[in-house]
Length: 119
Image (tube, rainbow, N blue to C red; front, side, top):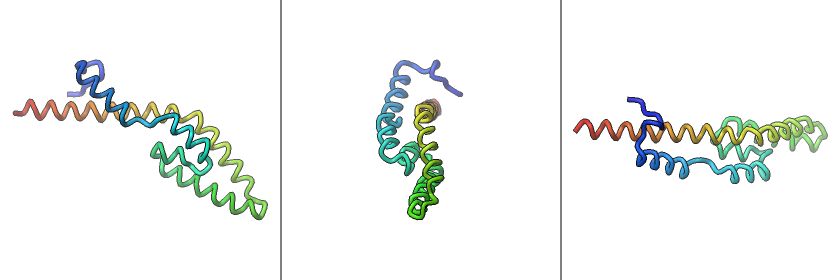
């Protein structure tokens, strides 16, 4: 049986909402990481986007190293634009994470109900 949030009881909905509130990424924390460590991918690590965070970190480190020989400014520009674009993407990332948490929690409720029905 597939549940949607409209099919949940009040108690189950409260449980789903409490799980979302406990587990969802905090946008304030994300924006602080973006502001202070954005060029190094700090906000991407926070949203568990590890692959692109490592790419951003590597590009920043390489660009900083090359800046010492005056050819790394292109990389710094790319990281700067990438970081700026991420500022607008983060609310969507948080919303997708909330939806994932809701799906996981509803699946847990389904499994619990199926176990209880089996007895």
